[in-house]
Image (cartoon, rainbow, N blue to C red; front, top):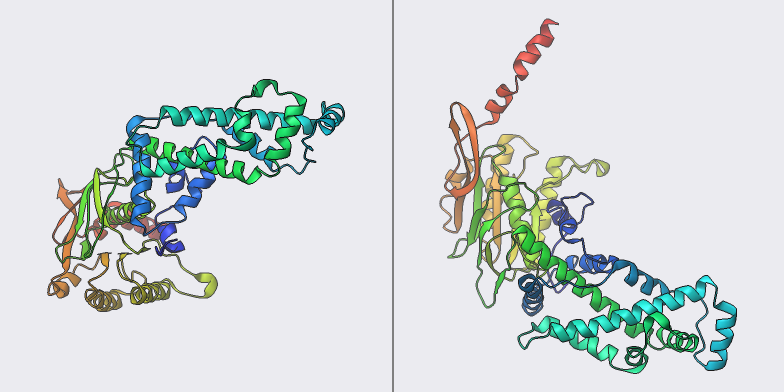
Length: 440
């Protein structure tokens, strides 16, 4: 994982791999091939701190993005090639006498059909890859793609694969089938499996680029060197219909944001969007924003949807305490972490939540080599935190108009003073319902 820290709680908070339609994986997973989908999962499971890898992968995706290149590959054909290569059926011997024997005894069998069809689609694929590389290889080809193209060329320029290019894949002779099968499921099998993995990677790069263009994503810029910088313009959450975009910035000595806002103002959605942008940037993918520049962080840790741990006999509050301790331990061992807390200590009474939040945030403010974004309902904390010069105070704007709350979902400087909790309770007519029940 190249040192990048991300845990299961964070992946759940950001809805990266869940089976729901709105998960991050599902946004990108409509690759042309099943193998491409597996390659996508592999990439998304391995965020990185390697700025060269991230930059090169991002440039390769942008190449497909800018040119709208489409691969002419079909899942059913790739699937049959894999099925053929993994077959445990007896391999052909590769000489003329055995080829005749195989043809006589197996010609009409399902085994022979799978072998012949697998070879047909494999030769067709190799011919197409050579043509694709020839047509899509300008002088300024991104390095990441150049490495892939070079390796494909190396794999297809030698031995039986090279000679197979001269054959008519739709009309293979029985001795050609025997000769190729002996090599492709024998000495050349690993080469062909590697070739398929390169095809699956191209499949991922193409579809990620297509998705980025279709959804209005942009490509992050990576900042090397000392110091810590993060800025994102028009950030939005891809799972929200008609989302409101926001700008977020960390630099100039400000490495902690204290976020306030009323219920339903959009605090959690903003934090998820922010975490998602950090995560996607660290797998080299486009991000849901118009622009983004970031230092390479060493990890991302979020606490947004922390579940009760009833099976272990833990209350929600104690689960929160253990989570904060876990984050603290990570901070002792790593710098440049991006840490997100949504509603610290919501599982206890207001007095304890105030005291515990103040103590934790005050101590975290002394850590200057990581970034923190912390939301809360307890706006009174702001008065106690004003003395820390590295804390910026942000709010989700809400106001009343004609005695009704208006949620702008916009982030701005300041501290929210709107309190909508009682308004929401009264507006639902709960009191009238209870009184009616009492009369009944």
